[in-house]
Picture 1 (cartoon, one colour):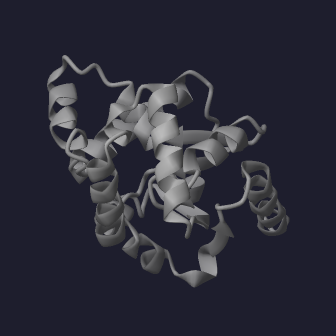
Picture 2 (cartoon, rainbow, N blue to C red; picture 1 turned 90 degrees about the vertical axis):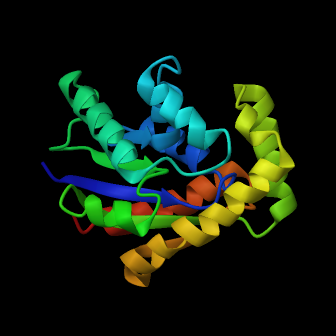
Length: 197
């Protein structure tokens, strides 16, 4: 099965999750956040222990574990009838997280578009992550050192994914704006390219 997909891409705190959740409520779009898949893992399980080993240090979870868990989640959502690949766009954030994952998913994802949420104001990013950490009990986001490490990991490991997909597929969106303006920019663009589907 090949899924027609759009990717929400950006550094931690750029607003991918916020936009993904909103898009996922629109009929014809199914949102799957890799972070949510991870956070739903039983921390007492072998995988949960393995996951914690990496996430608590702000490191990326190994690719095979990430892709395997993601694939199970997508299959489960299809079986439950929540995701209908024949009609729905799959909205992804947090995956593929690096070029190796993008290559692993090449035969599974028909990537129609990539939205790069760019947040040049780093102070705003830190503020968002800390606010989210308190609101959602995501303790990995409350420590400045861990946030800084995650930003560096993003630049080193994740940013090259944009080059992998190429400028033709990418729309750069300023995510320093209020969320409703970011959504407006995304939807304006979605309208333009889905009109050709």
